[in-house]
Image 1 (cartoon, rainbow, N blue to C red):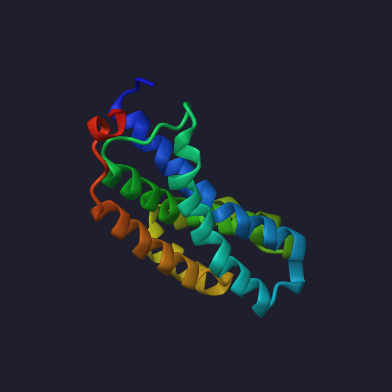
Image 2: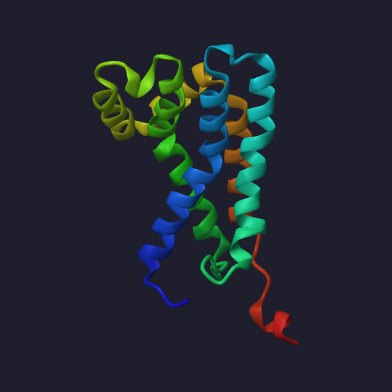
Amino acid sequence: MNQTPILGKLKYVLLGGFFFWAPSVLLHWFRGHKFSGLDVLAVTVLLPFTTVLLFGAVPKTTVFEVPENHKQAALSALLGIWLLGPLMMSLGWSSSGGGFSGSGGWLFVTLGTAAFPVFTFIMSTYDGTLAALSITTAALVFLSKVRAPDRVAQTR
């Protein structure tokens, strides 16, 4: 699939953010006020797993080709995770009376996205996703350092 470099990066920004935060949003919606310590353990395992799945299963389809530069894909996904954090956590909190269910939800998300490194970090401590965010950040930084296999070697 031939696409411009900016669209390839944007794709991984959006996919990285979605794949990471979707299990947390769903779990918050299903559990609501009953979200507890076992749920925190579940998101600590699920969120890094779904992000690694992004680099393992999804790129094998023709729509989501593995870019030749894994560094750009990993760092773009990492940006998406941190950038979409305030929006996705607010979506999850909406089921239990926070986020968009209260007044000022969009203002909070707009301000949170503008200052996303600080807001995502602080919000993840309340959300129960700080460990998952830390593990995934470290994993994606590591993946950005790993050299992608040569395409020539794969065709032989």
